[in-house]
Length: 334
Image (cartoon, rainbow, N blue to C red; front, top):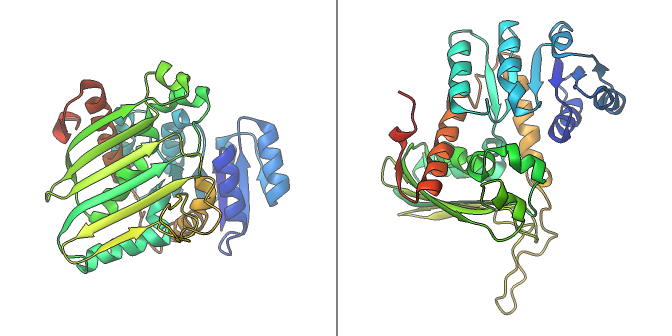
């Protein structure tokens, strides 16, 4: 198949490399507002560079991957759906929930599949965790712990437009808690602090955050995030039930140092960033998209799924600023 890519920044170029190695993909058509980025990708991956998203849509592509700036997501999704072409778009759907809902209303009933990028749904450990929950082998769940710790803060320019740590970082934890447990969040309580990088506080954000999510069956999910984990990139999930407890991400590249006498675990070089931690997940995610394009499966992460994660982020942001528990109906559009 022939796949178009719109946006060739860090993640777009990474997707281009991944797609170029998939057996199902014969050719790539790429574009970026910076012509040099498109030309570089074309040279590196044997792609055809064109000068606009419209040119991608007119190049006979079977599917489109959107990795452009967030503000461009709604327009590019809608243009691709209007062209009748299946689309993969990195999260979020749009900068705000309201814009995301407009996209949802526009694509519903179109018959065109839209796949939003939440890569943890394709990581082998997280997949195994979901299967363990669905099989009932853990028994009744009581506690879930989801962790995302970045090795260093993003640049000031990024923080200024990110929407805050809950919308930018924690949203991955929120999505995976919903997906693995199969439950919905009914209430949140969130807090945060600033431990460094003054520009984060100046932007009205926190660099370290925690949230307690109450799920609709009474299970408690604890989400922990920071921009300061110099040992490496740490993304883990624990699930505790009445019969058993399991963890995803508990492996030798875990960026955590044990101080127990004689302990040798973890022993390998820690994960440095999300691209190496989730390299296999990204490949599986884009492989799944090719199956969506081929009509062999529906979208494994819909616009509606992505909106639910964004709503949890909105509730946590409100809770952080108002120092109180927030029920989900407070942020859910009526």
